[in-house]
Length: 168
Image 1: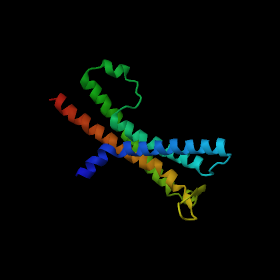
Image 2 (image 1 turned 180 degrees about the horizontal axis):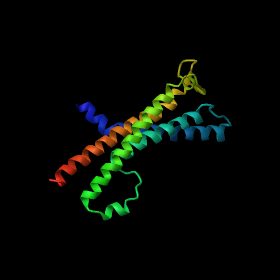
Image 3 (image 1 turned 90 degrees about the vertical axis):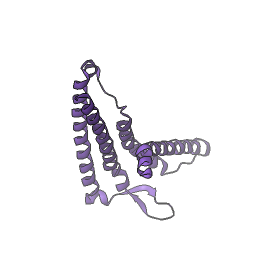
Image 4 (image 1 turned 30 degrees about the vertical axis):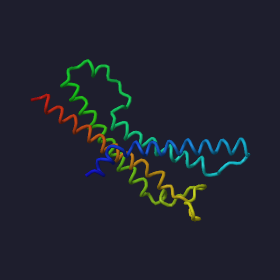
């Protein structure tokens, strides 16, 4: 249980930090190589782009975890707490449906034979001569949507627990 608790508390933050550090390091290396040595790594731009896509999807999940997504809640904040709770629950259910749908569609997309045959032109697996498949890039959608679904479910659970206390 300690491992699951650690994963629940830290997964997104460690992934976001790792991806952001990769982006910063590889962009810095690329700039130094280009402007000082007049040389560039052919694969670093694509790696940074892939890290950025993964960062977005994992960051969405983290945003749901800490409940810090941008929201226009001016009217909702003027309403009584019971109404706010019901509106929050409805919004979270809609978001959950959208994330589950995105996860399903993203999974269907990566199972598409056309996408399954695509490879990166410049990215290779280390110590091999094989191209990295585009499935790793396209997998960011279903993985991010799945992580977001879990976080939204946790928010729904917290809202229901709060509602049970308030509506007694």
